[in-house]
Length: 292
Image (cartoon, rainbow, N blue to C red; front, side):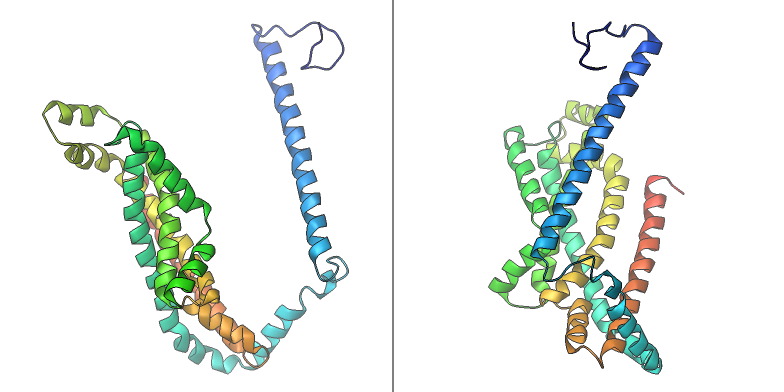
């Protein structure tokens, strides 16, 4: 008999009832699978790099030494105009607040929609179990389409401004949070729900009193995490005309030389805002989930 685990040569198969041989057998299988995955990853990286090289206007390796030319030009011009930076930061602060408002509104709308989808997609909690696949596929669809694609479609329909950005981020957030909320709800203890059902409580009462108190810390933690992501997403969507600080950054970069001090001021403002919200949301998540 050929032992396909240890090679093509005939040989004695491992005795899996023996702890030592079983451990060796599992270790070798893991190494084999790991090696196969590594080779697949290397092959995909090589193929992707080759495709990018074929479609690129120039050669990547020959132009590698010029990689820092543009950042050096931006920073040198900003340094020569460093006296303007505090005023520029103050000038672009309203745009940053608009970006944060877009992210906050989109996160709130997405979290509400995600909670509805999650409750419909959770098998042991769904009000209409036959519709569970529909809720799941809807969440998958919303999660699969990038925000920028949704924003471009909505800008074509609604025109430029923050509304398409809010709707685009909210739809993508709903799909992402629906999956996280559903997984959290599936792990909830159903005994409180069974107790409420035995007293004649309605489905909404069972969810409100039996499930939400258990999953609320995790749901809020996930929503805060998405808020961090949405702040960055709302800045990126500004490049396609959705308002906020990203739109100002696009205009400053389009003007090129002479406006690079504005580019640095916007980057610094956005970077500091992301750091602040990252720290605040991390602290809030630890307090909610771990009580620390």
